[in-house]
Amino acid sequence: MSVVPTKANPPYVVTSPSCFGRPRFWSTVWTLANAGKKWAENTQLTRLRHLDRLYLYCDNRFGVEALDIALGDANAWLVHVMVNDFYVELTSNKEYTFADVQCWDAVRMFILHFARHWAVASEEWRAVVSALTGTGRMREPKRGRLKFIRALPDVTLTELLAVAEPGASRNPFESFAIQVRNWLVVLLLLLCGLRRGEALLLTVDSLKHDLDRQSGEVKYWLDVTTTDDEDRRSSKPGIKTSDSHRQVPISGDLASLIEMYAAEHRRDDGESRFLLTSDDGVELSAESVNKLLAQLSAAILPAALQRFTERTGGKKRISAHDLRHTCATVRYGLLIAADPDRELAFQRMRAFFGWAIESDMPAVYARAAIEDDLMKSWSDVFDKRVGVLRGVAA
Image 1 (cartoon, rainbow, N blue to C red):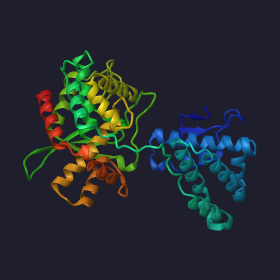
Image 2 (image 1 turned 135 degrees about the vertical axis):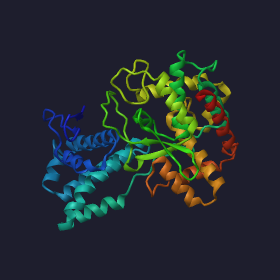
Image 3 (image 1 turned 120 degrees about the vertical axis):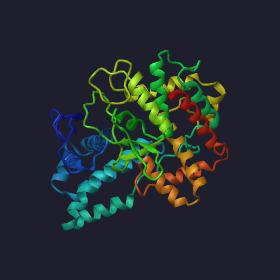
């Protein structure tokens, strides 16, 4: 494997297969230069793997270590030729994939980092910057069908809640403690709109509360952020961007469920402070979340699952991101119903879901919310889940 962990700084490097695993020089410099951006571990790994693809292409096309040598010599013309040829290679196949799109984004980011620095005193590097800026991003590949927003249809969501409820006859999990944990996972994704990794980063101290002096009510929220606690998972969850660090307000009902789970049903091996744990008390993994959602998907009525499959263009299993999509679609509708100011709704959604201030994701969900069969009583669906939630948390 050409991207390897270092147990140092930077935590991962791209290595040369022909030089006994020696780190690629300029990709390592680039990683260190971007250390302050706090990329999630998976984001960093993905980008380095894309750079490894560029390096290997240049090794084969221009000679061993050709890219690092050209960058080391500040040879703008040769670097431009290499990157341009790589772009042609990526786009020559009309069936290029989304991974190819991501690869080009990483390569542009990498080369532009150095080109902009050297362009201050070099006309040749200014030409490279101009060329890469003009090339822009690759368009995402089309697959001959519409791109679906994966919000759950009303019938599918109602079925999922009925199956996932602790104590339900169709719940596929035998242990009541595991049923409560899985129920909490579903609600964190559905009601809080958390990404899977964000839910897995929650600790037993993430739930906060304070007294609202104006209303006299206790307000609850979750601190969604990183932690210094040791994480023993092989695939470690992370916060996606700097904007993803946030406080997510939650209801008293959900807060009660979290407290009940932590006090009565959470398995603890004495070493983990992460909120969601497996049956043996270690940190719950992303793979386990995928598996439990797959089992819940298999337990819902075939007609409800078929409706979901039709909505999502062929998917047969509900994913963590499907629940986040559902939360975003519903929340937009509720915000607009309370106040028709569209921009204000967008701002609130960006803060709630951890999107950048310039993100156009709220507009995506605005379009989804006005689709005909997404207009079916979303608020009623949420009213139903509140009743179920109160029954469990009582």
